[in-house]
Length: 191
Image 1: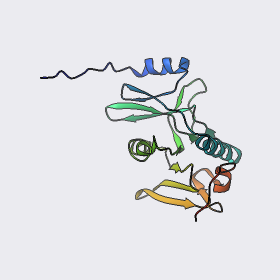
Image 2: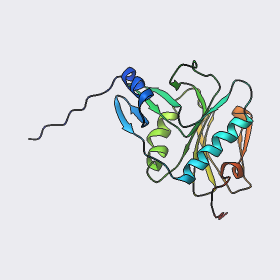
Image 3: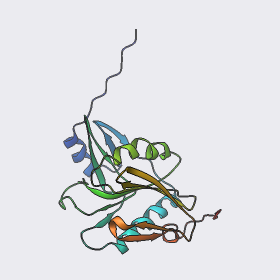
């Protein structure tokens, strides 16, 4: 008979305190902490371009955040903290908070190592956030953005492809040309 290995779960407060001083970012899933991996230059360019394009177009109470800002998700039975590649928040937490609770838009740039999580576990968790209007999945090596947009019938999947495509985000009064998201990223357009 084998003995199940036990794990010490970390309280939220301990996670948040340790994350402020950590040289490595960690995501938090109900007490378990997971180190995040690095990314390619293409991934980082797409994420930076996306955040910059959002930042340049936003006005009013909404503001864009980069991948250093955690999003807290309160699920029945556990709390999670994820670091999306970009987010837009229109009802911000206080400046001294280490996370945001009410994103309107969350974006993940896909990679081989995160694709399954971004389309599965993270998507399901993000879509439970009451304030979330759009969840974006951005391909770093193809001119393609997938949007899950909140409607009266629930979240609906949309796809935007090609350099000339413009992603409408009326929820935050923004239109994003894919050409800006993929600026300085070497991609052969196949559409």
